[in-house]
Amino acid sequence: MRAVRARVPVVLLIPAFIGLAFLVLPMAGLVIRAPWATLVDQLATAEVGEALRLSLICATSATVICLVLGVPLAWMLARTELPGRRIARAFVTVPLVLPPVVGGVALLLVFGRRGVLGQYLDSWFGVSLPFTTAGVIVAEAFVAMPFLVIAVEGALRGADSRFEEAAATLGASRWTAFRRVTLPTVAPGIAAGAVLCWARALGEFGATITFAGNYPGTTQTMPLAVYLALEQDPDSATVLSLVLLVVSIVILVSLRDRWIGARA
Amino acid sequence: MKKLVALLAAPILLAGCGGSEQPPAATAGAGQSVTGEVTVFAAASLTETFTQLGKDFEAANPGAKVKFNFGGSSALAQQINQGAPVDVFASASPANMKQVAETGSVTFVKNKLRIAVGKGNPHKIATLADVLNPEIKLALCAEQVPCGATAKKAFEVAKLTPKPVTLEQDVKATLTKVKLGEVDAALVYKTDVAAATKDVDGVDFPEAAQAINDYPIVTLPKTRNATGGKAFMDFILSDKGRQVLTKAGFDTP
Image (cartoon, rainbow over all chains, first blue to last red):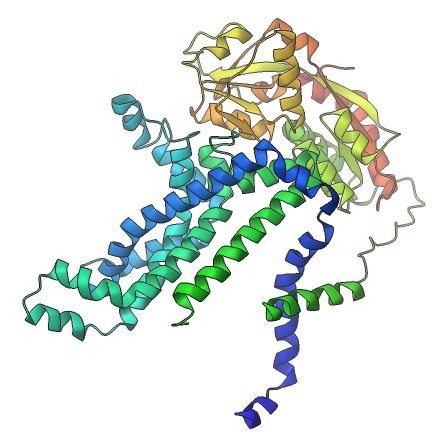
């Protein structure tokens, strides 16, 4: 093993470290330039607490929605032979590459007050998603769902389907087999997908500001608060960014060790 | 955790080696004729007029090319202070201008707020107080950008407390919410309403007269194209420039 390591070509290591530095440096910059002297005061303001609370609630709710809808979707893509499955998979990945602002515009055109579906939601039920916390959750679920679906689908494809078949021969219904056999097998994949999904939802900006607007306490999540703080007070934007960075790192690191570490 | 610290530390050490980016030396423009690229940062509310004036300027100076960056004045001021290469800055508020240049700016136009409403004013909004009706969804600019600061002032003058559903990041985003029909009313500049008559109507209100925006313009000291920047600013201040601006609804100072 040592012999192999010694032969690691420098040609690869140098760009690898530059690449790593390129990703880590901006985060280090936040830490270096943070106004540490006034940090505590800035954090104590009601607006920061409100935006952080809203961010956590919305990201978590969006993740729950993604789990409820995304796991069956991933199962459908991985285990069934329904026609149009390939096209469905392509559509699932679109929000990954779509600029989030475009996602926001698309959501507005469908769920907005004048939208394709939104006009009926509004006139029949008096429900209007833009400018509500529910709208933030919808926007976040839209951009984050592919992360979950792709992770779970990969796990399902990697899992051995013979156990499900064995369960079926022992008399389990398809639903029981899914619940008792498939789900536990791919649980680490679901956890990994959920964490990625949650992190993506937490950082969501473009679709949120386009679709849900920006109002403190209702729709102003941390990324939006950062953006507007930068307009007037770069120091407070730095503080808010730092909070978001710390929250993301803590969650990603801790969950990775506890749930996914064993399999990764 | 030790590994994480090491990873974080490595780039910090690297950071010490990186030199700060220097803008290229100002071109020694000795001649009078305007050539090269002129970079103009301008408030979002100037989008239509400045685009037009940029074309006129290029037509009058065949060697010149005007490049625009439109956005919220405060965001533009931030970008300039972070070293964005720019020759001319036109801001929608003196406060944002002050962040960039203490002296040398000239107020070239003034702008007033109007209430933007859907075509035909379906909710019959006639006064500023009407937008407080709980049935009305109102969009305002965030206080951090000039149109929001001006709107706040107008409501203060009227002794009203607005209940907006959203605080948008610039005046164009605010107007878009009316255009899309997602809100019933928004406070935007008179000129923005004028530029969007296809989709919205405007309602004047008396308090607007006490919340007027001054637009200052400046040629930046660290400019790359001093002659071009100066010439563009002169063009904006010329009769021709004023004509285009007043036609769009701006008031002369």
